[in-house]
Amino acid sequence: MKRLVAGLHRAVAIVDVFFEDHTDSLVIGWGASRHGQLGDISVPQNPAKGKRKAAFKIPEYISSPIIIRLPDGNSSTITGVSVGSTHTFYFYPLGCFLV
Image 1 (tube, rainbow, N blue to C red):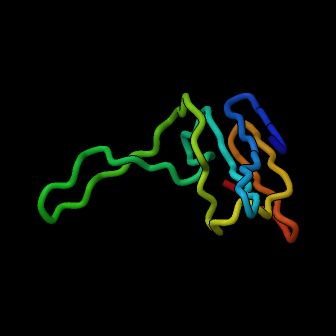
Image 2 (image 1 turned 90 degrees about the vertical axis):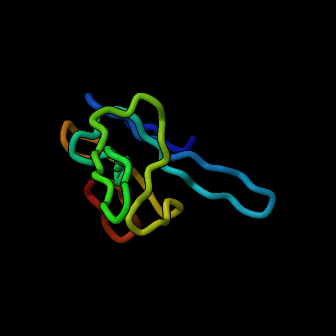
């Protein structure tokens, strides 16, 4: 584990996964995500039938760690994480991304 950051409502960790020929970093998190602070974790609320689209709902609380999908798709360049009561920041070498 490279880094573990915990706040009042959620925790986020950056972990390294080692393969034979390379290492990848993953961001995992759990806790409150009422406003998407743990990223895009929408799940179908109602199954789609026919041509209808499924309604999606963001879970309010994640009790088990999940992999957080970041918009750029690249967790390997993250240099830090900060969690607050209503936000999560992901720091990159050239700036940060707010969730």
